[in-house]
Length: 232
Image (cartoon, rainbow, N blue to C red):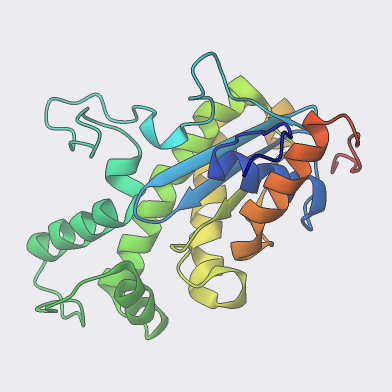
């Protein structure tokens, strides 16, 4: 059956970013969303609209190169040194294994049959020094990445979402993760950026993609205009 209605297509991360910019707690006209999980996705909103690029690859933050060394980790896409290779779930686990090999310190992570970001977060919450170090190191990498693309986009807000936020805003571990990101990012950015940039956790959860897709379809149909105000 054909409904003979127009169809709008949007990447899931772009849809989530649009939802956060228009309907989340950190509404902003200029916003970047990083989705952390198996990979590292991203969505960029400027003037209330998603930036898709010439080939639909706008906002592919996870595939920005952050390590140019000869032994840079290989990303799942086949290229070396991408952010996803360090801040995606497999990258976080690799970081943990590398740190475990470098030290004899006691850790609940040592010898785990199934080492996961959730197990790392739980161990960190229990005070495990290695787990805390892994989360901090992940935050450092993400903070440096935000500093890099902030000079291109100059957003009002950068949000962190997805399944791998190490407990998010409701836990001490999540707060420490966020603090590691801020402490690494702000000293690396121009004062014009760092003086107003907010880095927070996303707030819409699993509903973000649906809400963003609905909002985008209305945008494309010309039925709505930017409803929010920039955070200053």
